[in-house]
Structure formats: structure tokens, C-alpha cells
Image 1 (cartoon, helix red, strand yellow):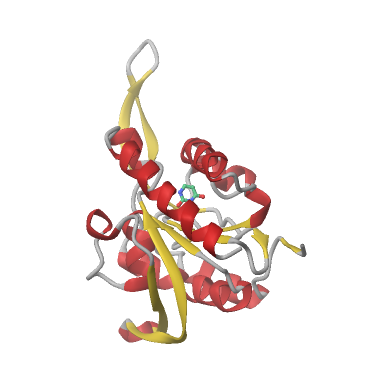
Image 2 (cartoon, rainbow, N blue to C red):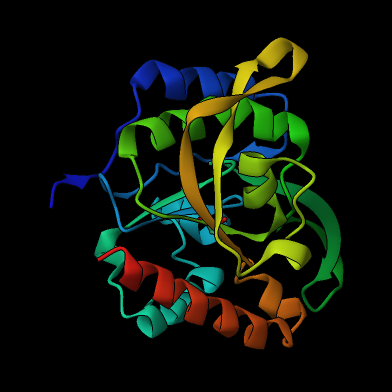
Length: 220
Ligand code: URA
């Protein structure tokens, strides 16, 4: 299988980085994986670990995701990883630290806002067109709504196979989107990080994975 580390044209990345300058976002993590993968993962945005080592889903959420892949009996090598936003959106929160209680400014992850998602949209559009995934798996509401729009809610559609065109950005200046000509096979499930805040989601995720297993088998 052909390994693709970076399919993105340089100017597309440079333009995206430029558009991100006004926002509290740092780093840029490239997508990673083969062409025509068994699965393309569409996540939310990288965190601190990912922006330091450049490897998508290599932090805490990635470890949980690895357990999902083990359950599916699929290797990370057969998966292409991308995210709605490729930089780490952060907020600065003052925090008392040290024995003298001095205040430091600490960065925390936050969900990407719509402007940030739009700034990165041409990247995800390009990847879907060129990587040609056999199956897209979106994680959480951000990835799901990036591809299918706000009418889709993860709590309602997780674990269901959706055969549909995906949203592609038509005009960035007026936030205009169009639907792809091609239909894709999209399977939404919860973001692995959501399990840290709500353990009961884990059971639902494994039910979704059972469904996904059947879908992947039927494609072999
Ligand atoms: N969450 C994402 O959506 N992407 C990463 O790379 C890590 C966490």
C-alpha cells in the first residue's frame, strides 16, 4: 500500500496558516495515512501532544482510539487521520502554581470555533478528494457537522451508516458551502475524548464499533 505522509500542496497549507494568525491556535499537524484507506478518521483538532510531535491522535484521546482499532482488528497503518482543524485551538487561563502560589498563564484545549473551521475547510476538502477513503468515520459533533451540517447531532446518529455527499467550502468570505458530487460512506461515533467526561458513552461507542465491524466486513 502506498504510504502518504503529506498530500497537501504547500500553498494550501501556507494560506491556511496565514488565515489562522488572528486566532488563539498553535502548530499545524498534517494528515497521515495511506491513499484509499479502509477508514479515514475525521476528528476535531489536535491537542498539545500532537502539535509537538506532529502525529495525529498520539495524545490521551489517541490512546483510547487505539483501543477502538484493536477492537475492530484494524491496523493504524490502514487508516488516514485528519481533523476539522489542524492547529491546536487554546484558551489561556490563569492558574496558581508553585509553593508561593504565583499565577501562571496556562493553555487549555478548546473546541475550534466556526471561523477556525472555515479557515481549515479547504484542507479537509482537498484530503477527501485526493485520499478517496472507502469509509469515513467522524468523531464527535465537530467532525460530523463539518461534513454533514448542523442538522446532524452525534447523540442522534451515532452508530448509523450515512451514505451522502459531504459539505465542501465554496466561498470562504461569505461562509458558503456546497455538496460534493460524489457520495461518501460516513459512520459517526463519539469522540474518544468525550469518554473522559462521560464514562457511560464508552458502552455506546462499543455498540457503534460492533456495527462498524459489520460494515467493514461487508466491504471486503
Ligand atoms: N483530537 C483530534 O480530533 N485530533 C487529534 O489529533 C487529537 C485529538
